Image 1: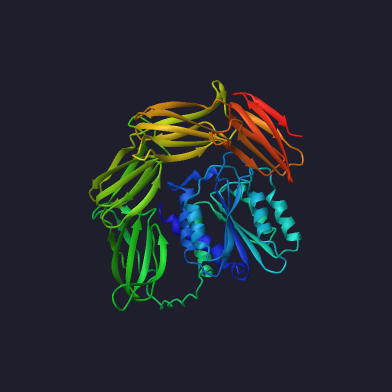
Image 2 (image 1 turned 60 degrees about the vertical axis):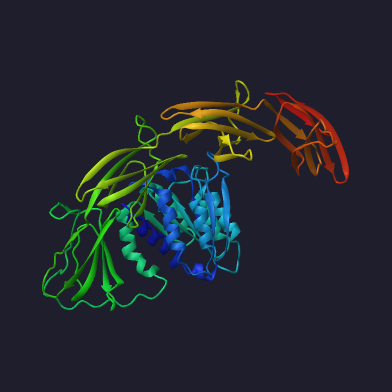
Length: 546
């Protein structure tokens, strides 16, 4: 259910805002951007919940707070070295962190121990406090030991604390990372499901408020145990909703607008409040309705809140006969301002009337509008009308490039008047799959000095295998004591210039290059040395420049 997100935001806010170290020193959020974040909780991808929670919390922090972001697993699959300081800790970085998280890919492994170690190194200080907030939905997968790291950091004498949010972890998995927090004097918070998050919110959010909370209005001695038991319905006369919904009770301002929120409760609920008139809001999914209620000290009020809504059950598919796509994005909007995003197979309650469904699978899009009556359930397939292109690169025919992180760019085949081609998307590494609308495309593979285009056509509901042959080999250069190595085409142009294929400040270099002759220029201080090399497609050429 979508009310999971504000609860998670409150939980994250508790970790961020209750720590005095945020006010007294620097902090870094360490975000798990591994592939497991595509997993779902209550029908939503965990990465989407984390992004929205970061936006909610960081959008409201004090601009003077010095905070940064480290992410891992967001650039490469299967790499334990994929750790990056995305936003250095500084004042006023909240929006930069939000934007970085929203644009981040989630695809790699979980080197959480090394990521926290790097965060601690970035915050190194023996005088100022430093805090790391680790958000992870998985345990260490790169042979690190978070417990040992916690003890090591605590023994270092640095005023450092690690707080850990275990997002969707089992109890056993939680124990594997909780010690990192405990060994540094921090907190471990288990965010296993919506229910546990609600309980955490009830016990911690008051402490998490950045401003003083007004004293609650004391309830008078009442003749009844409860004086409010609201009931929620999709349509008048329909079955009561008793699970998955949320209730909010507000004071009413002097001008009749909605005032301060008194409480938020969930599912079937009873409460006791001081006599007076309040604004009651019931919501579930994308539907909400409000009702003004007057409570007394001596009677139970059971108001019926009617949502005037229906249920949508959506099955996103690439094609009509394709399987349900668990990674598909479904954005639901209507003329009244509804705007909700869901992933994969989706069941959601929406207001009656027209709902526009915007489907995204890979680079394919489709839009359609459905009309729902109050109390109606509509189940339908949502079709992207796309195909799949599987792109692999080869040094030569029969020799696949299966260990390199070559770039695979997909472009429209049709050129603009200026000769340019629209770039659709870019990914890296072997065996890339692209979901695309029907049409003509170019697969452009680039690795080192080699770039080759391969045209292909996508048809709806079909897979096309695209084979890109670079006719390239590997040039391995060793130049002991060198300051720089440059590789140029051996053949000069009409002006006597040679095209530079690669330049590096190093003593060695490995370059994937098309077959042909090359000139190698090595600089050792002011001393220049040259050598020639011939690269043969599909072969490795090794050369040492003395």
